[in-house]
Amino acid sequence: MKSKLISLVIMALVALSLMVPGSVVAADTTSQSEVVLAQQSAQNWLDGIASSRPDIAKWQSATVTSPQVFHDVKDNVVGYLFTISAKDEAAGFIMVGNASYEYNVFEASDGRPLSTPSASDVKYAVSKLGIVVTDEKNINPVNYIYGGTSSFYAVYDLDGKKVAYNLLLKKVIMASDIQSNLLPPDRYLEVRTNLR
View 1 (cartoon, one colour):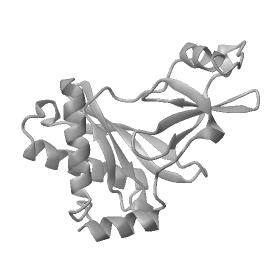
View 2 (view 1 turned 120 degrees about the vertical axis):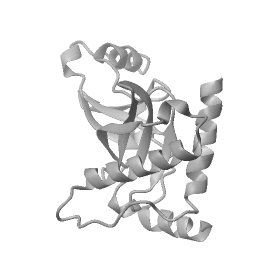
View 3 (view 1 turned 180 degrees about the vertical axis):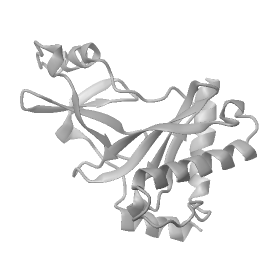
View 4 (view 1 turned 90 degrees about the vertical axis):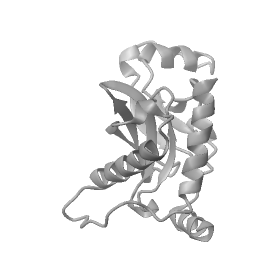
């Protein structure tokens, strides 16, 4: 319950941060990769939250690691999911948009970091859709999709059927059924600007 409350507070802080100019230092993208810039943005945001919110003690001196590329439903890269690590332990996760989103933080949580499910977990979940997988060796994610707030999916191609495993809810749907609420970059930046 306490973790859920803290997650809600963090989401509120992310929403409020939309009203404050981004903290990413301008950089020459020809000399630094997009992932590095996204990681810098995530770290800057995390450091700012940790210094202003001492009640989230586990984020004090935390770092962001292990980037995972996420796409939208049209297969465009939209951002990067980082694990928040503190004292050699996972302490949450943070999702940051790509250059088109000016490396803004989409969401963060001090809850359990998201991870790719095991092949046996996917096999069990897809069996509820009537999909039978005989060889677990063929269960590997082909893509990761971010559909907006709390919408993280690992996508699998199982004998020509694309299924999406929701990393938060631990449930599977057909990939074509993913409902995205992620605004396109131009609209997102317009809304963000209007909130300032």
